[in-house]
Image 1 (cartoon, rainbow, N blue to C red):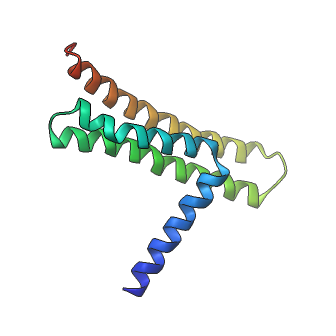
Image 2 (cartoon, one colour):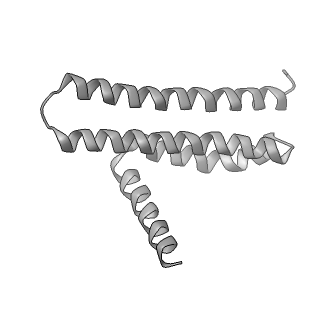
Image 3 (spheres, one colour):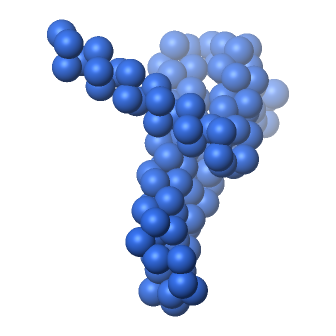
Length: 117
């Protein structure tokens, strides 16, 4: 139980540190806070609500991994390293794809809600 408590504490600290240092993460947390109640408004079925919230949590997970990669890269070298730049671009692309997936889920849900689908 002690290990689980320490892991939860470390996770919370990691989220706090990332939110303080990354504007994109703060924006995504605000989006999540707005989107959770909205998911209950636009999705009638529980599984659809869960899917809408889950894709936003997925974006947060990918953003956190991207942030960790960027911080690690900055820690390894402060020099302008083209290979490190490509690594950061790849992790950024992962965030972009996660956002695309989330956007598609939300567009389809909104389309269904307003009767277009």
